[in-house]
Length: 154
Image 1 (cartoon, rainbow, N blue to C red):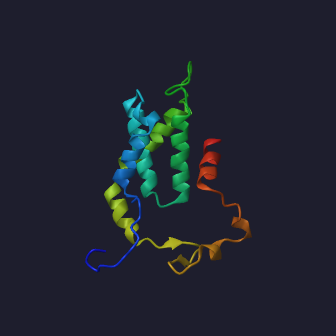
Image 2: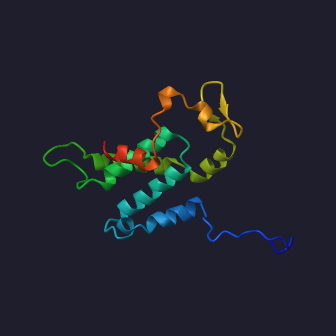
Image 3: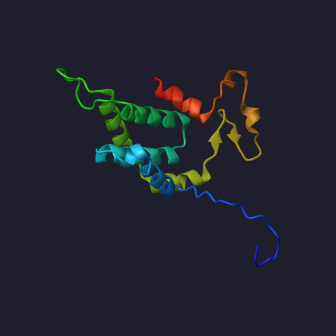
């Protein structure tokens, strides 16, 4: 702008979208920030980090379902008078296993050169139109909010 002395409209805001800034935003959410349980706060922020680097919609769905089990549960641990674990406890164990087995640096390096599979033998490239891969069987696409709500309602 200054060097070329050209008039270019400058955007009024800039969104920085990287994992660290996203995790910081998550940690500032009221329910997370004000949580009296540090381990729950930690697992929620780390699970959201897993979502950022997740490369599969199926894995993202499993992570979200586990997060909702934790967030929406009143109880954790064993079901009273039994040896059965609550869904919240199982979800925490699942997310902890993902968090401890995932090396975020390696994931970020690998995602730089991913070719997304549309069908066996086909690759989704920059020139592929998203509408070209939607067929009548796939027409039930919904908004992100609708998708996450359907997971939370399970």
